[in-house]
Image (cartoon, rainbow, N blue to C red; front, side):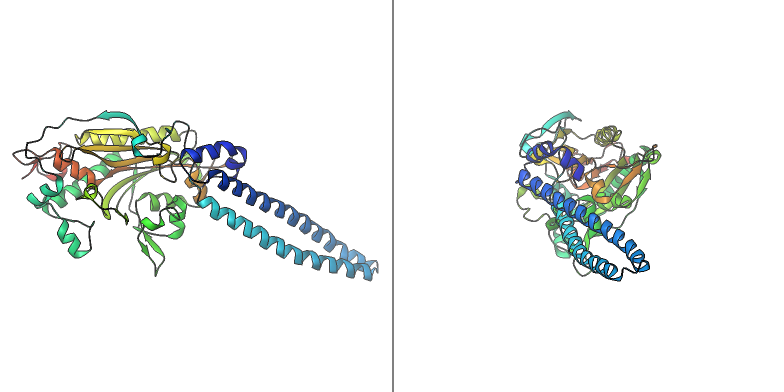
Length: 424
């Protein structure tokens, strides 16, 4: 959530940033924020003046009674009563303005950094790096959904029977591959100094608002209405909310956490060949990195996270590219975001496997996640997160890019976790 200070001190820069994100009605929204904030402040000023007058008059009543000025004392009491009634209305008016302001701020996205490219959609993203090994497949190369059937790794039809489309059942070496990837990703995160967390996979509404999934992504989240709980779309939500309403010490940062969870996304309206097989699921496994940092160090933290994710793809021997997202393709909460995509040789397309974002103070302001400086000042933290990695499309790329006449070759980094070199 944008801070009032950010909006009042840099109004036009905020409007320009929101327009860069293609947020409709940016100027009108910011004008409304300023109007509500001015109303809240002016009402607060009148209320403070009245409260001061009530205190002053109340102190004088006793003295007036001692001096025998009963009529004046009664008039003073009547004045206090009038002011208190007026103050009730002013307090209600101020609370209403503050509530409207808060609800409005929830609907306004984060402002992108200057280096975020202009653009409206994915085709405007900028490729900043490409890497990995070139693949050469057999002439009769198959897409992963056919390979999964051939080697009995994933049963999509059984998932439909048990739950519905988008909930695959992993079997045999397919299940082993899932577990191997999870352990590999967690071990690599631990080696990089991350503390592993095992959080709940359902959260309350306050947690959803804290990280910005609510109200922006409410339609994409599974809602348990009886208990008013939400299935998490990513471990970012519960792990970042560990620090909701917390004041950290500057010496504690950067805080580095990782977590493996199942993730749940409704993905309403997702149909067609681009979502076939593992390309888009309603439930999937993911290892997430979360950092809490100071403003001065968060850009370095972001780069370290990018390097970590790239190193995972190098070890998995997959062709990849890194994109800096344009304003129109960034998430609601991000100030800057890089996507990692792996190339599917069999499908002849790039598959997104990670987004690594710096949210600046946007989430921290919602969460009231702060830190105390060496000078004992309290400041908002910066929050960051990134997938390291999401499994479905990694599995798809591993199966498709490594198919040989002998079977599906597994990258060397996974063999110790799998206990086999080939799926055959």
